[in-house]
Image (cartoon, rainbow, N blue to C red; front, top):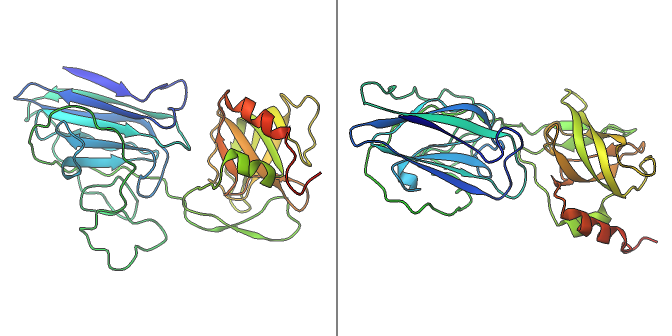
Length: 321
């Protein structure tokens, strides 16, 4: 017997934000389960703290029985259960989403199943395993952390109501996780060589309301092209859906459908995916070029956000006419 599993919206759209999905696979008593991942694209993070796929030996989300925790763009190697049950859990937080993944499983006799996968090779960062803490590059791990340090705890998610069946934990190969080293990038559109410190993790602060007035422009749009150039950063071209705060942008009226090129001082932050739509609150560089610095407020666009943005656009910002 065999089957498959995939993230919601696969392969047409990105998986939704703020979800938790579980697949409890049960084989006959005398068989084991071999899980194989195909396409894999889950928001990358050094410790897979935000969006991740976790695989457990048995039927419960018990960290002591976790076979692996994965994110990034490289699929994990084949995973074989010790007993006749396997639990796959997928969690996404409320920020960045990605394509998702597809996987297949087969129920086999122990002699047919693949043996344990080889130990992960360093230095590439990969999935997180019980009792280990991945090492981000190029920042060395903090002193005093031994091999038994469990590392950061992932965001809690609802547990599936299923019974556990004891079994041994099987080591599996680590999935390579995309890690963005912290490095300075030059801000596009600036007449001076002002360096921008690029973080390993894209973070935003505040809310849509608090960032509206603090930003030079606020638009919604669909990403048409993303260039990941080396050196002075990158740029993205989007098709504008609506401009709620044009600022110094040179946009036609109405702005819908206009092409807008945005500078990205940091190549991977904020993370933009071709074909996805976003709310983008950015800055204007010294030369007047629109920029999305790493701390820019960028979230996936939802139709219900239009009313909020329209309301904010009609309110005067404090200290502005």
